[in-house]
Length: 151
Image: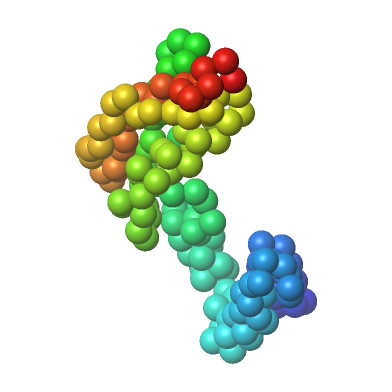
């Protein structure tokens, strides 16, 4: 009974996070049955294995965003972005500027501005314990159109 319950819960949780057939052109839904069979065949359904898997997932969490982003308004047109990289990650070290640009563009459009400029940009490492993390700070000025200033 425990084995059936563990298998069913793993299948439900796994399938709820993977797009179905035909969604976004993804083939990942094929991995859920194969993973469930592998788990059952190798006997990884004991309590210590399940607890270890949950602990590893909580630390690494591959579905979480790589960057935490805080936007603070300095005045009507100036916004300060603070970006912090995940503590445990498997890449994404060089993408801070891309993440900043995407968020600055999104915020600029939402606020009704036509363009933006990055006034200040700094990247560094925050040496916290037990893990160091990459950080970036940027000041972004949102602008009205230069060709048609009234827009």
